[in-house]
Length: 102
Image (cartoon, rainbow, N blue to C red; front, side, top):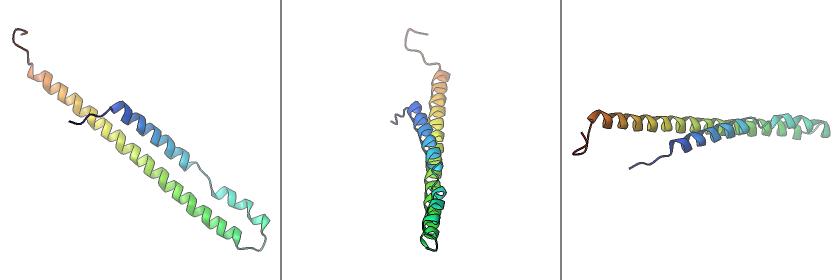
C-alpha cells in the first residue's frame, strides 16, 4: 500500500520552485562585459560572451526542469489527497456499523 506524506510532497514542491527561481536568477552574461576592457583586440571577450550565453541557457533549462518537477509533485500530492478523500467518502457511504453499534 502506498504511504505518502502529502504535506511533505507539497513542501518539496515549494523548495524546488524556490530553487528554480534562484537558479533562474543567476546572471552569467553580466560579467562578460568586465573582460573586454582588459583585453582589447583579443578574441577572448567574444569567447567569454559566448560561454556566458551557453552557461546561462543551461541554468535556465535546469531552473525550468526544477519548476516542472515541482509542478508534477504538486499534482501528484493533489491527486493523492483527492484519492484519500474519495476513499473516505466511499467508506462513509457504506454506512457500515459493527455488531451492536447500529
